[in-house]
Length: 385
Image (cartoon, rainbow, N blue to C red; front, side):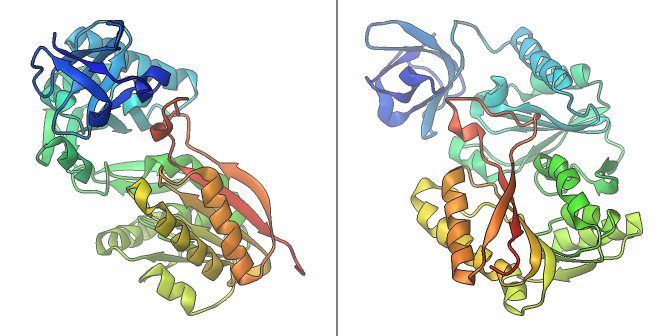
């Protein structure tokens, strides 16, 4: 087994599982990209084993603190542990994330369940090389009809991997109908956004929807309509859903028809809609990531400030504002500070009612800040302030 020796003060010496190229003192044994390597410190002490890719900025990702290989037995144990954890946590067995990369000790593997269909993403070279055995184990342990490969994420380019989509194991019979917050969605795992749906917000739909009863709702960045349709189902007085993506707005309208729900679906830019004015009792902001790099955080924060200033001006005197950030480079306190600055620009005072984080099937590992990305906040307007 080849390996690396890390420099003093490398983050892996302080509990992190990644080794960047700048943290490697020496490479030995001529490891091949995608192979398993040993990780040692300057005193020749073993820190664990990881997957190696010289083409990636993250050259090594540790998956174990002891010596072992990525064979079928390993994948069977780790995936079984991931499934068992979610069962203990009370996660849904028919819908949700089965495997969440480093959070389950499987760096570069993401597996989502939609009924009897499992969708697999392998975004590291080592896992991509072993995707057939991973798919076989997933199908068995999840008792799935098929495992679909959705390896069309841009993040794969950083690992030198080409895009790929298709059925890896079993037979796929077509789109799957699932239910969340009392709303039915038709999901096409082969063609939908991400792996088919934003599974990290399924729980949030049920949290936010009861707030909508009797209120005028504006759902911004609505995607396929999760929040908008859940609010309509919960008795909102009216719902406007804004989405700029042509494919997403088409799916949103189909989902509204499927559920017999009346909403106004606008194919438009959110910032343009907010600039036109109006008044709403509940505004939901769930934008895509504002930055993919730490160097762009200041720009992202200016974007959040402007977005919330515009939204706050449209809130009724006792309105609610629900907002999310999925940019893991933006810390929670930075996100909330940007919101506060936006509220100041709009001359609005709001109370913090609650925070919303990632659901249990997207667990966060302490010491691995990259596993935490979703931050949500619910604010209530202070009448007369």
